[in-house]
Length: 91
Image (cartoon, rainbow, N blue to C red; front, side):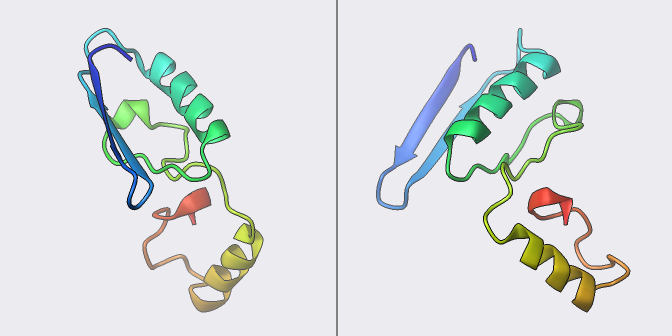
């Protein structure tokens, strides 16, 4: 992405990427996000324009054990009232 800044905190393994949106389309961003989530053990998208995150999971790939998490969520929150869509896999 053009004009981006990368800050890595090796103490906790966090990498932050920020940059200007000029010249970057939602389609290009979504393609790059797909590449990141395929390579990273975990990735969370913190802030982008709403149309950029349409159709993508901002929490990256589903972790091992996601099905168990989904079942627990369904058991304890059957109506999906609590934080709907605010976790990996849009749980």
